[in-house]
Length: 69
Image 1 (tube, helix red, strand yellow):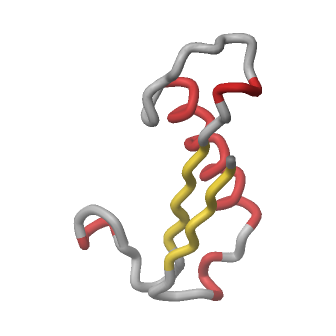
Image 2 (cartoon, rainbow, N blue to C red):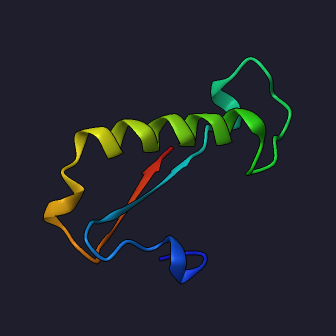
């Protein structure tokens, strides 16, 4: 997993989420950095949603990466 090994859980899967929005799809045409606040909040909400929906204990020592663009 990304980050420290202490974050990894041996009895369940770890879910990583990354959200990014195309600049042309918003009213704000300025280029936003990759880790802006809005994207970070959306990534956190997605992660919490998928952690509740996916039975992570069925996939021990695994990592699930979710990219939303």
